[in-house]
Length: 287
Image 1 (cartoon, rainbow, N blue to C red):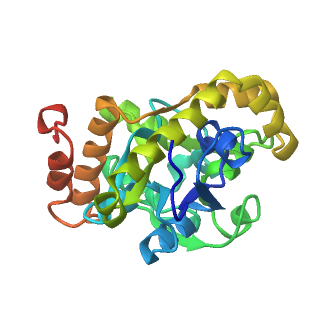
Image 2 (image 1 turned 180 degrees about the vertical axis):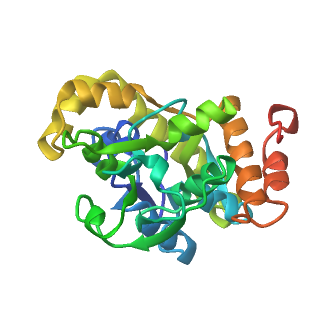
Image 3 (image 1 turned 180 degrees about the horizontal axis):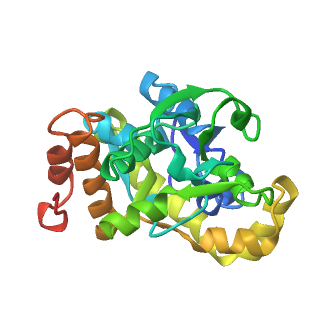
């Protein structure tokens, strides 16, 4: 594979859910002319928009809001087809008592607050969201409930002190019957169009890194345990609940989310229709 000159600047989500795809790449276990930058989803979104990054994993809402600026890396996303324990509303109070209350929202993500608004709207649950830098468990000292994502949500799901939670991925699947796409890998459209081979090379490099992660799961989990406070069986079940295939089923889920977010006023009118033109329209039913 020819070298990329200059190397592509690739953003990498700091959360566990990206490890099966990018760990081997970050550690140099597969070749790739990439400069990998790890950060939170919100920070990666910002850096990609300003041109500090050439490509990145980004929240699905970020992609939907900027479809004209980004090209998806074919075949790759981060999704769940049911509950996954890494996108949770948590509270020490019964969740049915939260109507009219203000929920603290981690400032690390963009998609999940909109997902919560969409689900609350569907269930006719009027709630207020307030973004905060507070983290778990301190966030629950200031708010009756909190929306947590990523490793914080996983930590909360392991709590044994009476904490209750609502898994938004599970709620979405029960309502729509479709997967929820949390993030996908994209490249700036200007780069993809001026250097088409770069997008193909990035796709191949990420796919090779993912293959390594799939073939060395035990090694990957052992390394995760050195950094994160989770047992091996928990990590194995968590990874099994995730899927990384940006296939027809995933596009259908993303299209449904685009429609619901547009209806809720969180996406510009026409965003869902624009997405159906991005992929083959016959594969995506926006209902």
